[in-house]
Length: 308
Image (cartoon, rainbow, N blue to C red):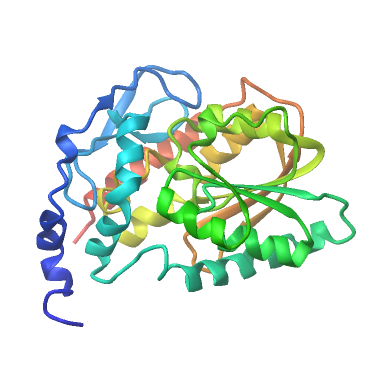
């Protein structure tokens, strides 16, 4: 590792980007995106990059989110020319649409193995990969399972790489995606749900886009695993993730959106949790158990103030 790539110089590398997060257009959240409650607890006042990004938690259901959060326009500009340089600066190595492809191929292979038994003998033909980045995952699924694949992602440079793989592509966010009444047999939301601006709306849209016999796969960065690994809640917060999910809050989202969980997978990285779902009946009143929410706040406080 060169001197400049040493973690000690991380703050300098991030400062060199000149990104003024504080000046970006933002919107205050007055209600929880999951349960609609309006009382929050502030958990962090900055993120892992050192930006003044406040993270709040809903006192009723336990959902954690950035508040205020950047607008869709601000995030569009962020993904255009800030996101990959910022992640590169944080890790001290180049991470871009080219360098991530080997990592994404390994991920695609792992996810396809998890889904293979469910897709054996399956008659589905169409695939929508939401937040599909450079299209490596969609292309792998297309080749392995014989699917017609479309990639939806807000980053133009990564969409261009996906297009060169021969995939259909759409540049944008799923929350505003106009599918022209199309139905998809398999929808993937891989390592992307945390990036959504409105998880509730996105899952409702996905439920509408899913064919009656379709399947939906989504995985989350488990907040509990992330802050335990980082040793702090600040280390788990980052401006590119408007939301921070746990198994309890993600399963509440799925139940409320009408998506029945068929299988759950704790990923090999011990950080992600994956869900394979099918269309079901929405339970819009489903909530995380109150004792689980209180346990979450106590655990976060213990991580923030460890015993010597």
